[in-house]
Length: 406
Image (tube, rainbow, N blue to C red; front, side, top):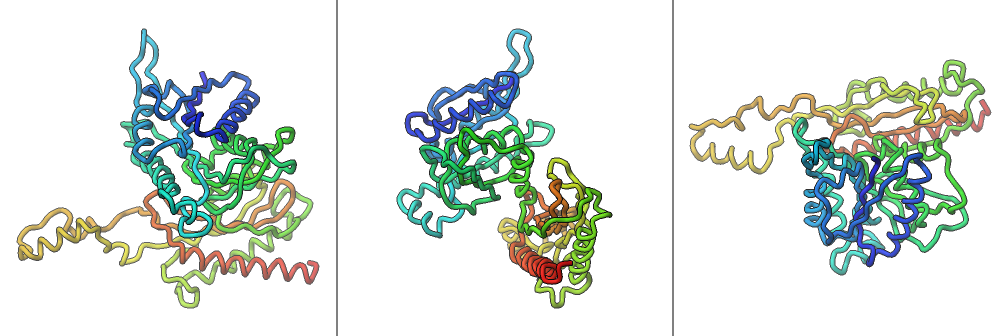
């Protein structure tokens, strides 16, 4: 049985109620079998184990604070014992939290004003972080894995505009409102159809009239930006007529140009503007029907571990070393072992630049974050240096072809 659990305050969240009602209609339209939707208020007796729901949808604005979320997840993520010879209950494997735009921009207008009384956006941010922390702290082999998705909307309008215009970006970068049908469609995609929405934070604005629709390929392309996430996208125009990359001269020339551009990062960092050492490797990503890409080439610029990073110690480790120095170094603990400070196989991040030919025959370039996990410290300044250089180079290439017509 397919089941979804929705947790929100129906009395206080009138706009959210519109979204939920539309989402239920969309779920039933999207699947041949009925989807059971159980709705609970945060203060109600939410069933332990989530009543075997596969997905839990929680509206953060209905919760008091992070502890409220933790208490709810503490109940619904517990396995339940079998009843009358039945199978063991399975808790939700995916939790989607609906939050607000601006939770990561409380130092900027208009979000600073929204946050000034009571720290409303700060509380929502703590709820977002609480979900992410719980997802990442699951014990492999002992607890079922848990995927998270944080979806940030602006003001939910009373209705959608006549024009279908929906925007989706990673993180918290958009401004504006969203119609209830558009919000419901974004949630449907994030819950049921878009793998890149798993373990991601996204924001969305815009509208989709009820009588209109967006096809599967377009939805896939809108959510593609979450893979990495994406840092840059540039349309390089229409390619050749063939779907086969090797027969598309424009695609091959641009791919060769990007490879040549990347050689500046090989060897010495002098003149690159980077303070972090890097390695340049070919991309491992091939064509993908789901991504709408028939041909793909590129390179990965991978950040390398520095001595500074290897020698970094936490406050606890520093206190332990200070204690040892005060004791004359007579006692040694495992934390003082030189080998322990070295982390093997650590992912330091990087930027992957891709040249792609899409199913509609267009050529585009994208830059995306790569070589990361949840422990990676994002090197935003180094990423920015690479992305700006890449953007300048590609725009010069596109501009030159526009002038020459070749």
